[in-house]
Length: 197
Ligand SMILES: [Zn+2]
Image (cartoon, rainbow, N blue to C red; front, side, top):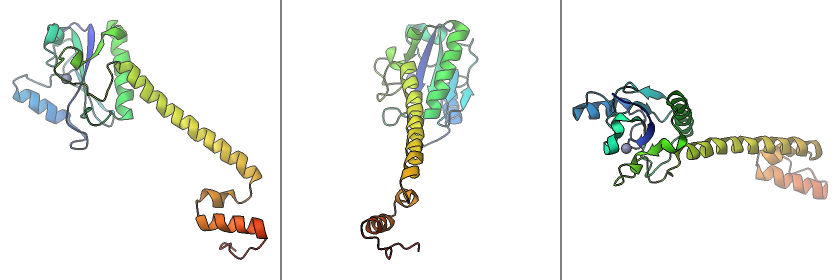
């Protein structure tokens, strides 16, 4: 019996570079410990796929401290976040899963914890990551938006510039010869270095 009042987030501690899909391996490992099945309620693979482990009303096997296995939903992300950060897809999937569970069980943000909050001898959900799980996810998702804003801005700049600057495609191609030829032609009016002609 599990009454979800908390959300606890883990990492598998196995780099996604070693193994990009890990659900089956974790499930086998936990069965080998005699736990019946994977100890988490959800596992999020590197590609953002959310895989279901235990039913939410079934007690977990992921955080033994403070009876948390009977009072929480356990979510595990694949990866070793002592040495790598979650993928953006994992961040998005984790964020929406947490928000959905918060709504379903009225779990406040202060009850969303990394495993190490309870198991203080561990780094779990990874020493590279802060305790503020939702804040971290929001920041990661936000920085993606910022990047695409920057791309948009750059496109605008190029559009603007191409109205005023002739031969901008040569500049954009980054072809150093074209650029030199362009400058040479501009300065001398001599066109012989322009390969395109
Ligand atoms: Zn853990």
